[in-house]
Length: 411
Image 1 (cartoon, rainbow, N blue to C red):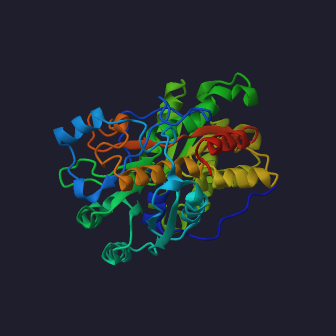
Image 2: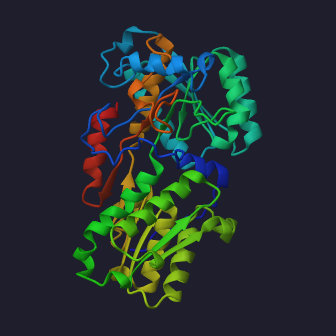
Image 3: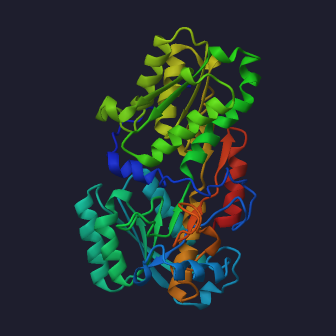
């Protein structure tokens, strides 16, 4: 069955940040097992930040974090949320694209369980609108906690507002930095380099089941980057590193920068289709192709190209991101797109909500929340970074993964 082609060209900055969590890989975990419990060695956490305590890197805050209870603000903590105050949280995000709507649905599903209400404020993909909307929310005086989804490049504009507001907040997907370059926000992310690496590893471990014992020199890798986003570049590097570590020739890696191709190729199906078709045509010496991508749109484009070129049997595709893979699988697709990195949205949403409740209840401060997660960007981060559970899945395993994660984090 032919893959469904995306018709909308998405805004660059908002899309890049919404599908990523930022880069440094210090302390990043390997792909988490779907059955791992919150707070385990393969699951990390986001920390939340109250505006009044945003002083990154201080020895005092690191010491306080080391003495704090690591279960506070996690699913392992025993709290009667129904008996507490009903907090008003606001989810302010870059724009109203599909992923943001899906995250809103996850938050709404958690309202009753964790005793809060959620307000949704998308910002049209325009930085100035985001600043104005955030300041308006702060000035209203009725917001108990903020979920902030914006680009790292917005740190200078947004941090002062958040820090002066007195409102607890947690960043979703992407952290902010202070003027000294220290992470200044508690954030829920997916590890970038590691998720890229893991996306290709399944193919490297299983390609012989499809192709037999082929000559590694005849195997090539197609990879699509988006050079203006460091998180996506980190995923791209992880994919390349995996290919090399599994013994395939580095010279057989072909990376295309979709940003350089022009707006038509920015985070769209075309951004995967064109590099795949062009690369395959230019390298007849390569008999077998692996393809993994930092974004699922590019994997979908590569899968469409594989169909049109008649190379489904000699190409294996993966990516970081699962909604499109699941959609195509459930519509009957059977082709070269064999697997992907899947992240259940509750694995993002629940840590954020529990973190905000802990801050609002006074059971933690921004510096003490999730003290065992202050090791992602340096050995002694002032704020914790929760690494959301994810897993490599296939058409045979994605349902089990999603169900198992929902059993841990869902409503």
